[in-house]
Image (cartoon, rainbow over all chains, first blue to last red; front, side, top):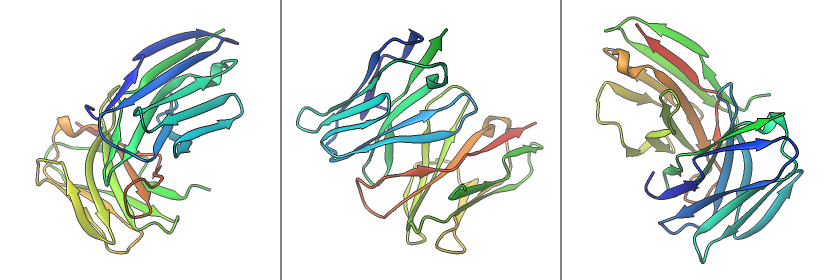
Length: 106
Length: 113
């Protein structure tokens, strides 16, 4: 949507490499969420962030509320990381970005 | 154990018929939502409810009617089904208010033939 802009729209990674996804927000928010929609269609919660950084295994996410952006870093990409990554904010309605389609290749 | 249960998982309906998509959440949340996702597209907001009352509605058609019989239920009734209604419908929930964490069910994939 217009409120949440994600980049890149698509990404292909070699297994074992690193990359970063980004979200820019055009409306104020104090939290951000990252989801992974797997190839079967299920949405999994990855991170729920206030301003700052969280890490979970090979994933790390940072939210900078002053500059209205968030990043998701993927380290040592694995095949099972493939899917569509969405960032979102909740302003009484959940505003989603258009997603980044990630394919991890062997 | 899934905490947001959507039934059925798959549904095939005939054009012109009526169907109800079921959603129950066991997270103790008081806000619930419906989203629609057409093939390979982002999620599209439909409705939000808080304490069983409609808060926001972005669905133009009155053929889509949420129904909340209990505070942890938000079903979606769709009447006069059309092939364009074919999509995956996701139910979600959160604590009431902005900036709360939202959780999604696994979706109901609806195909209208």
